[in-house]
Length: 183
Image (cartoon, rainbow, N blue to C red; front, side):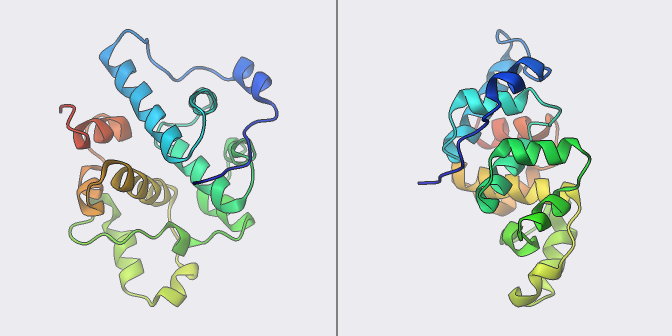
């Protein structure tokens, strides 16, 4: 079972100050978004209310799994990662501060990699021992973390997830399509 440092010593403050990213609870889009956030919480063994706090900060839904992934790898609270991101630091800059490198983000994608083609090519052109020197863009980090999360959570091949990235509806739309919930 995954363990992350318990979130958010400043939970009440974060909750009160953070603008909401959730849509109306009564809409289909809001329901799918809540379902996605619940899946993120389940995958990372985080309470739904703690994931909801992350959704209220200026993070896209696709960045929430990255925050939790980095926090888990680094052994820090997710709020520490959020603060660094809000200060304008890139994902690789944050990762490097905790000795997390590109190899930690690697996902084997057998087949077309969609928007992750270039990142996949950089990994496949080097020995695994050299992966720590690979540079990834913020978009590639977000894509790789979400491919790993959605592939494992939904039980679909990473290549299928990668092909869906960049499609309509963002990561929530990808989640909905892959779980069989529509366009």
